[in-house]
Length: 120
Image (cartoon, rainbow, N blue to C red):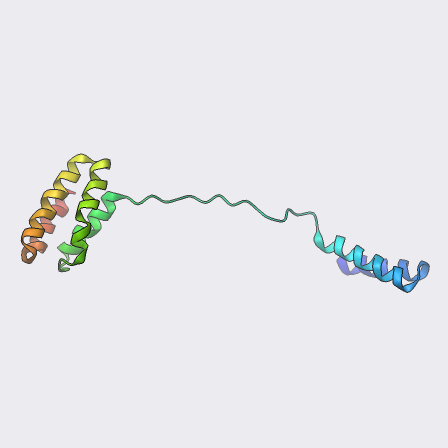
């Protein structure tokens, strides 16, 4: 469709105007034709996903229950417990108790985590 419009524009302009004016009219016509009527941008809505402290706690406990040794994540226990207590105080207390036992006895982390996993 656009090519037929361009051809018609070229034929009309060649018959009635000199070359310089013809080129200017052709360029302005093409710019209007190809720019279209669509908006330049579309506003997309972005949502911020908030982390789920219970899910984070369950993931940590699940890894310990699967046999992962206790590592440097031990330093983030306090933050994780605090966040979970804001959402669910009971489960936050359970997590605090379980993680303190794991901290005291990292060798038995797998057994403690399996028990804790059932409670969370």
